[in-house]
Image (cartoon, rainbow, N blue to C red; front, top):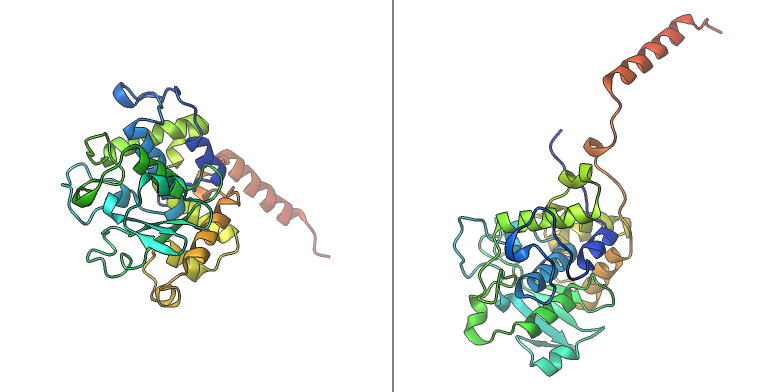
Length: 287
């Protein structure tokens, strides 16, 4: 059986995003060993985790492979738009960013991916992140990131949305994997840490949407799976409906586990049970 990762639940993502400042991250040394949410890296990380939960982005869509050079097709500040009072904006001044609230959206243009290398399948279908209450609000995390570390003009095209520092260096896979694992160690028992990866955000969103009663084609559309049926049916999801689907997913709790990761019986117990059943069958007389 393949190594299947477990889904992150809404409560687990909340536990990650509400870790207090000053928390020491296990097995991390140097500048990122202590959580400080106001710093460039942890502000970006909060937004990255929240966006991963509400979009199902793959790791390769939010961070760069260690050997990959930054290029314009990646997820940049220029991929962010705002929908305020039913009007769309490429950027907003600080005063208007502060006033964003329920009914407004951060609009994300999906980046290049291996399933959409020419930005023709998904990149022309924006993602509407709704403003709502609670720590899972990806729209608020992006808005706060923009307010704390603003960047304007053409520089937005070359600045990663989720940056390592104030110089807008991209976050790499190896760094993200280590930091994610450290956060997981804070919220699950040691024996379960290996059951989670960055892909657990995507699995968790899909599982939560299913539990919230969303249809399979809709889930495929929201997670940008290559399904002709879902893409043709939900090619232009309306902003309010799109946002509400994501809020609904945050209101349910995923508790299912992968078969591979369930507690196992040892072989002796299995053999004993089989022997008992065989013996019982052989000794029973026909009615």
